[in-house]
Length: 611
Ligand code: F6R
Image (cartoon, rainbow, N blue to C red; front, side, top):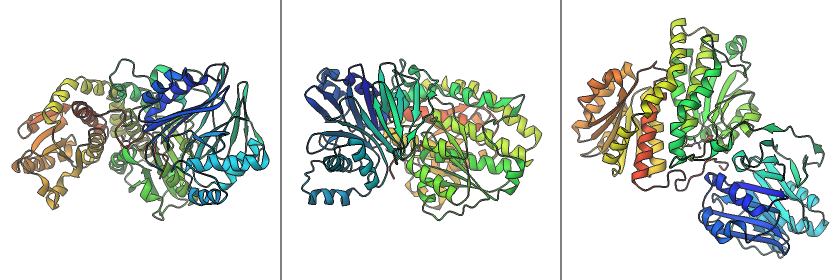
């Protein structure tokens, strides 16, 4: 939700902190701040608004000389976005500065306690409580590490913390529970960050902190301890993607770059997993024997990842001939879910850190379910806690609205569905071969769709000022429409809804009037004629129809649509992977024409680590 960075070393800290925050701004962007230990003690600068405001305020870091510091970019939870609620928070005595990502659930109780001891607070945040509590315990024991230990035993909730103190000239302290934090080992100093993207410019050598761990970072090394202060040997990992993967590289927006990167992202995710026409999932250990013991299959996720689950439900039920239940993680976790030791639970998450998804996974695990996670961020919490993990190799996704992560999740779910169906013996050799072939052709066909971007831009220019949009379709088109609708609403702020075409007549069609924009989805060929009748129904009520269909149906569709985009035909299972591309582009261009902040839409953040 928020982004944290910390540096201690032989370089000036402030420019490194600002650079790291810029790379993590997608995590939160309502305010930002940095604290540097200067020769005059701790200096803190923070400001409401985008990072640029802060950067200008400190002249790119020149105003804060020092080689030890922490920084934060915020997505407000407790207290409105303003200068005071921005991090870092400083203790009343000015001795401690701290950045926090997560939520301290018992902060009110701790705040009351500290106030009863005379501590004065300045902000409305839960995070300031941690800074004040730390100073309170430090004043008791005069040992910062011991004080951190005492604080961690008292706070409840989730946290990634970066702490500096004027009494600790050469070290910063980090702690983590249920909120991501990585350690970076550099030649000129060492780092902490919420995300690898913040430090990749400086080092590729990282370690992932685990829950309950505390780290002491100095210019020459990093020591990690358990909550009982026993030393921990961390495994170092090398990040294998290039810094340019996290930069715009000449594209106007990350979202556009990531849309255009989809064919390559699919190649990376799919191609190594197909050998001699067979799906090979080296990373998982599911056997036929295990699958025979499975009585329930769940797919659990949030947002776009949930929409991947919706598409996969149709595909897996078709291939596996068994019921698949798809659940929103935020509902599933509190629904007393019917998971037991015979349940296979698929968890889908780009970030691997979404709190609701993680909690749902833990709940499923507690009940005995076996977890197979589909994750993009290597080393993320979900990836580490799942029984099996399959990575989507989409590369870093920076735009808040997901595109290439969604596409790679979808393709990977097709592979897994096919793999399981083959184990089960529920898919014919012909269908297996056809899906494999079409997955291999997918990047090329996607490129053909991307070539139509100017047509889609033109349609966006025709429709960008509509204020209400319906995405209608049947079966896989309905599931795909859910994602198309989310894309449009989240970045262009246009109200839109996805509807199963056949359901419209049961109430919602009353909202269709002259000029209502309906995106009619007709890529699911078996129900094309049915979907077409629903398009005709809305047209008859005055709707303007933008249709997305397959080339083989284009002519039929043309009769009833006002505008049409046709994507190449492929196997049914794979078709949504092509159909979604024009919907992503349409949302992008509409948002562009409405002057929206595409990569950082209002009220949102990339990684949702709060409930
Ligand atoms: C929408 C979007 C979100 C995420 C959701 C889950 O464009 O990106 O709906 O899909 O917050 O995030 P992950 O996949 O990281 O668990």
